[in-house]
Amino acid sequence: MSIAPRAPKTAAGKRALAAKEPKLVENTKKTFFTYGTRSTEMLKALFGDWYAMTKPNSVNLTRKKEILPFEDSEPLEYLSKKQDASLFVFGSHNKKRPHNVVIGRTFAGQMRDMVELGLESLRPMLLFPTEKNVLGSKPCLMFAGDLWETNPAYSQIKSLLVDIFRGPAVDKINMEGIDHVISVTATEKLILFRHYRINMKKSGSRLPLVELEEIGPRADFSLRRRMEAAADVLKLSMKQPKLKANKKKNIETNVLGDTLGRVHMQKQDLTKLQTRKVKALRPSPVKRKAGGDADEDEPTEDKRARADADSDE
Image (cartoon, helix red, strand yellow):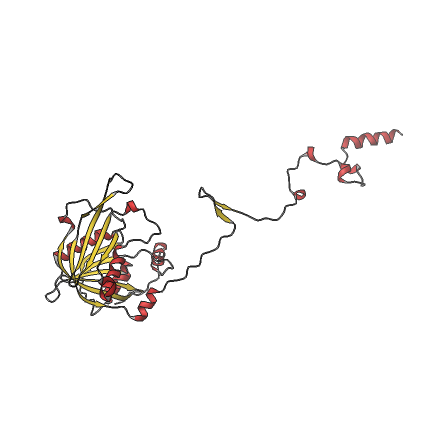
């Protein structure tokens, strides 16, 4: 299953295709949630909560599809290209693997890596009657346990969860804007997913009193299967381009944030400057034609008076 490239017919279509092309600085990673032919209410509740936590950088696809990620990944690659989303969360249910959750990502339209987890227990957000986090706010991610650093499978899960929940990349962040914490604890048998809201209260000092209040979802997972990235695909996906900054000469910014520019010009000859022609400013005929015949520029009355004087003689 592949997408046949089609030439855009409108300007909006050209802009849409240009937005999906590779860039030196990529857009924020998007995640799409989808289901297999069979799913359960637990999976729908979990995906609904995760979708609410990752808005607006996620898409929830409710239509069921016949997909077997580890046997044939082309349907997920097709959805990844169609939704312009490199991350996916797939849910299915059968007798052999009940409440199955597959988390993975693609690179350049091809499957990169994925992990299969089993949802052992769930308490959704609806069962926590507390105030939720602000839409679009960045979470504080906390991973507890030594397995995240020592076990390759857990390191892969950590990388996937960070990509899904980190949100847009920023240079600076206001600490007061961080209003929720995602805590993931690794044990030998289970992976514990917890979500808390940060409440800042007065403490009588400059630093506020920070309290955590669980807002859900509360989920426990078990590790089942995983697919690692190929060596060549991993090397290519980890490669970072060198950004060449364009040097702007003679441009500076003052303390008020205004951009000031300096323009270099050749020295002007003011004697050749074109000015307005006014009779009062015109030079006399003698000065204009020094040493020449000044009679041509004399006024008509002077010429007549001199002509009459010559005739009388």
